[in-house]
Each structure stands twice: as structure tokens, then as C-alpha cells.
Image 1 (cartoon, rainbow, N blue to C red):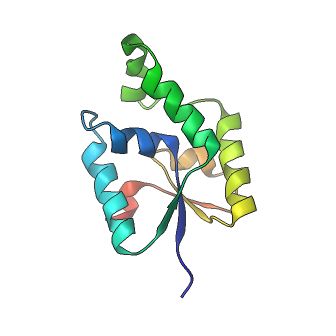
Image 2 (cartoon, rainbow, N blue to C red):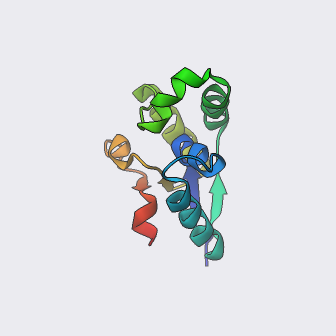
Length: 114
């Protein structure tokens, strides 16, 4: 059977790394479930750049993260491009509606895995 590939959106990575945020438990549970299913969890250099930006910004900008404010649509498009090039059909994200315009991938919210 082929391995299930999932790109982890930056909002997922942030909440997985930051235990103090509200969605940490939900995101961690979703990642653990995918790991039990032997899914391959992927990320791109775009994710790393966005993650570094969030993790190193001054504390007063953390409000953006707490309320789920995301980057420009160009970032999502770059993630989808990387997914298509590498054959990753699914992205785990807190914002699946951001990816509805892309017919070639499936955007999955962590709660859909429960």
C-alpha cells in the first residue's frame, strides 16, 4: 500500500511547537494519529521561513498567531506548488478554506482525523 503523504501547514507546525496555544492539544492529537497510521509528514522551505518569522517576531505580534491570522495567498500557492512537484496530495491545516481553489490537493483540518 502506498504511503499517505501530508504537508503540514505552518499554522499546524506553530501550534505543535507552542504548548501554550489553545489548539496545541488538537494539533498534537492529529499528528499523533497520522504517525500511528504511518503517514509521511512533510514540510517545505516555505514552511520553515514562515515558522522562523513567527517564532522570532516580537511578543506584541503574537496576537496574530493567537487569532489565526495567516500570510498572503501567495504563500499558500507556493505550498501547493511544492506539494504537486513532490506528489503530496494532502495538507493538514487549520485553514482548509484557504486551499479550496486548488483541485489537485485535499486540505484536512485536524478535527477531520478524529
